[in-house]
Length: 129
Length: 362
Image (cartoon, rainbow over all chains, first blue to last red):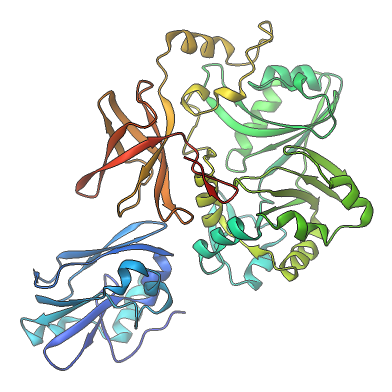
């Protein structure tokens, strides 16, 4: 069974969201998701400054197996991207909750975090898959 | 209900991720298929291919039967142990399967066919051999391990007796020899040096374990696919099937047109296709920018449309490569386009072979 850290929030589309406490969140894909996709070969990220809305497909994780859209789990502005993934997409596999993070969003509305799943909710959602 | 090979428990011991492959529970990877791929290109890796179907064809009519059954001519095989890659066709010239045939004597041959096509292959063999003086015996009591990579032969040698080593020493490509319990063949599906070894089921787990201990990396179906694609080797069901002529699947080299009076199944259809010159062809595509070419994507050329039959990220090259079926008038070196994910990308047309013995070949 894969690791699901309890301090993070989750979306059913397998993104994790860490509240940085300063109005921004860091987003990546879960260990479970990287396991489904297999070895990552390219990650296409949004650009800093992009305005995104919840549910937009704003990044692509391309693995040996498939290309998978990554969705914005909250609305706001992209304020950071993980440039290390350009040369080392395998970080998404080896450290999905750490060095494999993808982008940071400055929240339009901190209340949106309430709509996301907690660790138990995410666990239940993947058990149903 | 899925079947398990005799090495199933060994895969689980090595933390394999198992998948259902046409009814067989097989390892897709043991953690990272890219690392497994590199192990085969740089050192040595092994694959459980015990799911493949081994069929022995023996009897007075074996030779004449096989000369009719497949598009290459087994009469070319005169040295015991020599192997032949070829295809068997239906009457319309479509590929029922591709296979390897080993020759022992004119009355004794061994076929290795795909597991995904096992049932229809066996049915076809039975139908075509009706009334002939021969026996067709499936050999499910054998396991099969492919050991591949530049260090593969040296590592296998450490497990052989002196007599066994002497028998395989210097064996040319595409030969097989029975040495004690082991049938060792210089064949493979990776574009690297190595062996495919057929052995009794009760010896397979022990042999696998010893290979592990000599540092041979267990490799799953994921790496097997990227390796064979880099090597430009067809995968049945993707690159060809019963609706595809061997002329449209890079298999023309496996057709023996001479002698003209050898009436193999599908000959009439192929002769017509060859005269018409209208069959598409299978080429390689190379994408150097980001993205991965995948099976089923449309290829747009000035000569008409084509389709990607199989595509992947090439771990050796660091970019995507694919095999595609395109109009015959498309030329090697042309730039064509592929429609992928909301955009069109430019790709280069190459021969359908990208990596051999660890090196780029296009």
